[in-house]
Length: 67
Image 1 (cartoon, rainbow, N blue to C red):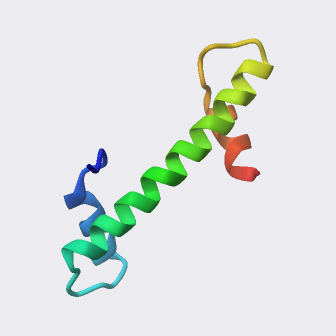
Image 2: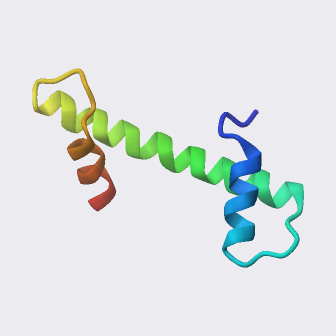
């Protein structure tokens, strides 16, 4: 079950030029976004631990995004 809200993702898709969006397309994108969020968060947690912190900071997320 999706943890991200479906309506805002559908709105983003429409704002990006999709006139009509199938529900299964939105759900597929939501699943992908959740997976990416989990992967980036795991990387960011590793950076925070390496720095001796429990709190994930914006800099940890930035580093995770960069690779």
